[in-house]
Amino acid sequence: MVGSVELRLWLSGCGWMGEGRMDVADDGEQARDERVICHLVGRSAWSVGAAGYRPASLGTEGFIHFSTPAQVAATANRFYAGREDLLLVVVDPKRLTGPLRWEPPAPPAGTAPSAGTVPPSGIMPPSGIMPGSADESVAGELFPHLYGPIDAGAVAAVVPFPPGPDGTFSVPSTLW
Image 1 (cartoon, rainbow, N blue to C red):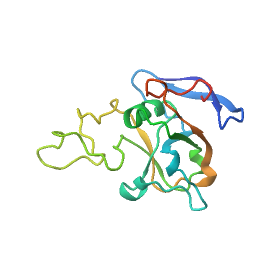
Image 2: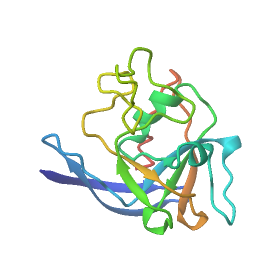
Image 3: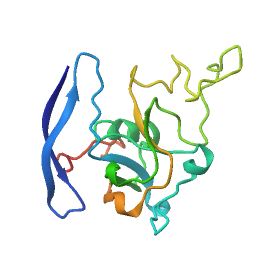
Image 4: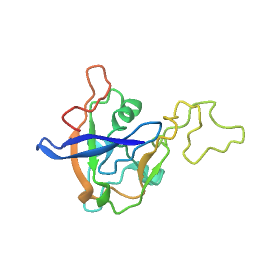
């Protein structure tokens, strides 16, 4: 069953961009709110021009990692704990020209599955994540993966995303 909660979006310090409702799943079902998706990037790596933003993962893995607003803090804590230079890139998926697919998580480029997680056959699943490994997410959780660049016109906002004093991330109440 899917319910809904109020959603308020604060972008670029400009004020409320809008209000609406976001689907929230219960009973083990994952809701998919496709109004915005989020990409985490270091300040020095962020640059979007006429050709769009093309991070290394687009070349090495064939897609760009995204999270939903509900997933972004956990993603930041999992892969970027303590980093002070992160930006949260908020994207309107309806304005993307590349295919957006909702798939099981894949580790960021350059990371390998934990030792001992390669099956005896030596063949990894397409995601590169073995069930029961440290890379496994919540069962059935899907993440948006963009198979093309982030189009400049799809970027709704870019905001600093610093960790708290303990090095962990949480989404500020003024953001969503």
